[in-house]
Image (cartoon, rainbow, N blue to C red; front, side, top):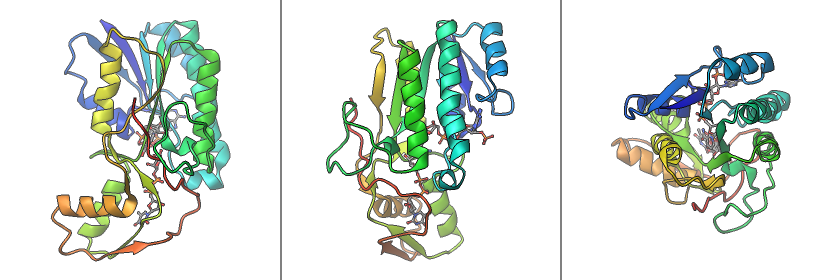
Length: 259
Ligand SMILES: NC(=O)C1=CN([C@@H]2O[C@H](COP(=O)(O)OP(=O)(O)OC[C@H]3O[C@@H](n4cnc5c(N)ncnc54)[C@H](OP(=O)(O)O)[C@@H]3O)[C@@H](O)[C@H]2O)C=CC1
Ligand SMILES: Cc1cn([C@H]2C[C@H](O)[C@@H](COP(=O)(O)OP(=O)(O)O[C@H]3O[C@@H](C)C(=O)[C@@H](O)[C@H]3O)O2)c(=O)[nH]c1=O
């Protein structure tokens, strides 16, 4: 039996992993919400790792509000930086393999072609900087880790662009969406399966990975797809925008090349 701790389990990705709970007879999951296990609480983490003998930890816990992170960066650094460090230290002490999730926003978006795992990082907003801090701690502390960078997650769970657009369109709102940022929308359910495949695979090729399952497009193109898929394209007014009122800068082209 492979014992797996999932932190931040009530978030979008955590819920996608919960859907897979009964699909694998050789996996035993422990799902912890932020209330049950706060990754910034070192004492609680220590207790948890000591009490239960995990083989893997999937860290889905994160501060993901990109605009709010500009206003309260310390909170983002605490969870995405220090929190990741705390988990990595417990993983090292107890020989647990860490599967950590990172983001396309660690890149500045200026490259002009898809980012590979060996490209230099240079985040342009506080969320991206805090996620990069988490990556750096993990690389320093652990040898057996997976850092999976992904992008533009959507699913039926939690908050995401797909659901925001769908809700607005269903309410009959006019949509104005930027076409100046390019990335790869990724179904969080497929990311969940990819993570489990890594865990059950015999081939332990540790390190950084890129995972997306969508083709590069702008948020505007993605909106068109969302509307079409939900038969709202004929009834919703959608206009192309050059800018959208937001606090954080976002990379122009953060397309990830998957390995
Ligand atoms: N969403 C996206 O588009 C993308 C996400 N990612 C990364 O993927 C991962 C999963 O993202 P996603 O599921 O969408 O994010 P969510 O915001 O949906 O989920 C994050 C979860 O982390 C929890 N959390 C926050 N602070 C703590 C803490 N101190 N201790 C424990 N749990 C905490 C939150 O709980 P609560 O709500 O109670 O605070 C929430 O349940 C993150 O690492 C994110 O950076 C990468 C690329 C794209
Ligand atoms: C809702 C909306 C957004 N936008 C713009 C704002 C922004 O530039 C872009 C995306 O908006 P959002 O704020 O929903 O997405 P954002 O929070 O930037 O999404 C990011 O989240 C983090 C967690 C990640 O790791 C990234 O991969 C990425 O998914 O679309 C519009 O132009 N019109 C709209 O109606």
